[in-house]
Length: 548
Image (cartoon, rainbow, N blue to C red; front, side, top):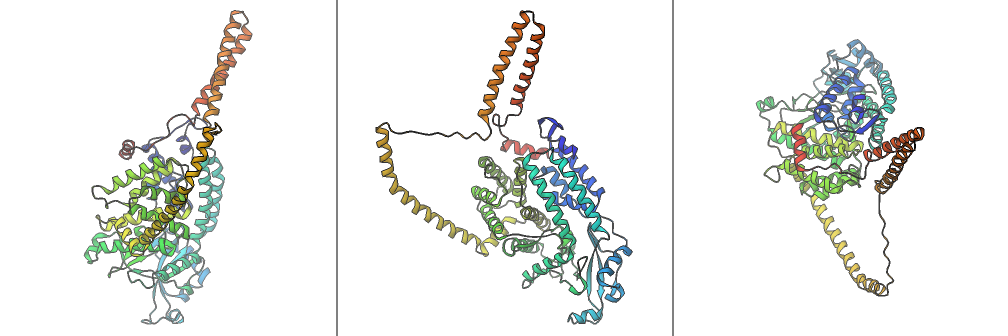
């Protein structure tokens, strides 16, 4: 925290603001990463959440923390067994077989493979071989609730210290982050909520044989235990194994992108942790989704604006991209649209290369994240998840097929679902309304112009001018003029008093001169309305990329 504060102000408690180079940011981020891993499960989750918040941390921090995985040693089986039996009863009575070696571990829970008792199968109405059904049993880590409560208290106590060193905009984001994190981690520990999200997403894909989502075994699930169908598959980034099995990797990549476009744009509920460990492919090419602990919802308004954003990107409509970002709450309406338009232009040009259609959405998002930190702005919670999901999914798709065109598939999806057609129809309707309003305005211009000319002819026309000074430029200028006059007067007085052999009075005048000089110096050092604002240009953006 102190290192982060020093990176923003030269002498910690005072001194002018500064921005350090990307190498220093990366070093700080790596130290932070090691600290989070050492502090344990809660702080690992905090790091994962911070990796989705470019409005709080610089891009170098976001890049380093994005690699943070739930690499936590598994809990002892006896402790996990006590949690399982508290929820479901004796293991031997509820399961025909239970492998006590976890097949997957995470910071908040771990997964075991088991086989259901045939009696349980018949109770659920399943028909089968009579020897039970393979399942995956996710068990919350023993005593994790008390550990999370203690860690959340530490974060809550630490927050005011950090807020002292950051600006108002980032303070607001940090306070929101603390509240969001407390809510998110409690949701992820609630396996009943995860079962609900899993069931809802599974229902949304019930008629689509391209995807496979495990079924929840409700009779063997509870707040701390979640039992699901066990579905085997090849890890989605194991390219060699997929190739050996004859699976069309390009088709898998296209299906994966389409699934997330459907979840975000159409369904409003999505699997928010699509890293390769949570995705697999069956031998017949179906995509399997695991671990719905991190899931999100998108309200209809945000869905609409995400569609607008994708349509604007597909059409290379810079103004449309900026409008969507403003309306969704990512970009401040007061931000310099000229600067942001240049950022978008450079991002698209750099990403697409020679072919207009060949550009990557993660590069566009990356540039947006950079600008968000610099301005700085904040992201709505689920939009941050959507941005991170988009970049991770695009990375998985490119791993499957290095020539995969994310934007082309998104454009096809938008066209198939009628979004682009609806956008064109809406544009035509709006244009028609504007033409009608223009015609009405034209009929009113002539008489108004005639009245204005008559007043001008009679010397009866007055013009009122209002000057906006949000940065207090005139106030600062007035202060400097006053300080300058006081400094001149005090220096003159000091010289006269010294010449009149009044040393004590001249010392007082000298001290007064020094105080005024300091105030004059500070007024220039803290100036906000005078001086150049940070600008993104083609040259310095390339330099930043080269340095990183």
